[in-house]
Image 1: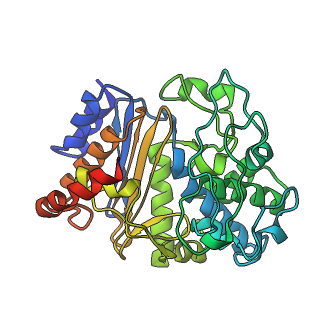
Image 2: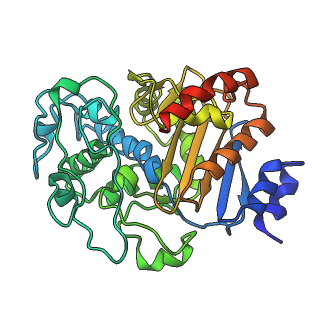
Length: 359
C-alpha cells in the first residue's frame, strides 16, 4: 500500500492523495488545517528529501532576520559594512533589507546550479563570476535600488554576509538559528548533499548550488510545514521558535510586484497570484503568503494563511511546475480556500496576460 493510499483515511475523500498516487514522478505534500500539520504522504516514502529551489530564499531570510534579532547584523546597515571577505560593487546605500526584499538592484535573477559531473565554484567565485562559475558577477545597479527585481544573486550576497557576520558556514548558522529550533531535523543547506543522504533524495540526478541560500535547501514537506506553522504562530504572538520581528518583517509588504513575472501565470492554474513582496516571502494582501521554487529536477510550493492556521506544502520530483500547481489547486479546492483560489471569471480574464508573460 502506498503512503498516499495509507494516509488517505485521515482525510476522507481527499483528491490530493489520489492525484499524487497517480503522478508519474515522486511527489509529497503536507497540509495544515486548524494549526495542525496533517502529512498526506504521496508517491514517495516518508522522509524523502526534495530540493526546494527558491523556497530556500524565505528560509534563508529567516536565518538573516534571526541573526539581526541577536544583534549580529544590522538590517539597515550598508551591506559593505557587514561584508568582510568581499565587497558588493555599486552597493553604496544597499542594505540587508534591500537584499531580503529583492530591491537591491542586484542582477543574476536565477542560478542554474552545477551538474554532478561538472566543477562547481565556491560561493566567492560565483559572486565574482570567476571560473568555473557560469553566471555573471553579482553587482548592484544604483538606479534600480528600491524597485523589485527578483535576484538569486542578491541571496548569494546574503549568504556571504551571514557567514561574514557570524564567522560560521551558512549551513551551520541556518541549522542553529532556524532549522533545529523549528524542528526541521530532516533539512540541510549543505552543498553538495552529503553522501550519506543521497539515498534519501527523491531522484538520483540533481544540481549542486554553492549559492545555497538562493536555491540549495534539501527538505521535506513536513519540515516546511513546520516552518509555515512557526511563522504563523510568530505573527499571531503565540509561542514560536522565531523572534517576533521575523514574522513582522517577512509578512509586511516591502515592495509591490511588477505586472510581469512567473507569478502572473498562476491564474492559469486557478491560484491567486501575490501582489507584493515581504522580506523573503510573497504576499497576497493580508490573507496569504507563499513561495515557489524550481530546479532542473524538482518543483515545489508552500502557502500559508496569515490567520487561521491553514496552509500546504507541495514538493515534486518534476522539472516542470504543472504537477505542482495542479496539486496545490487540489488542496485549495478540497480545503475551500476561497481567497487563495480565483473564480472562473477571474481565471478566464487573466489568461491573455498570463500567456504573454510566458512568451
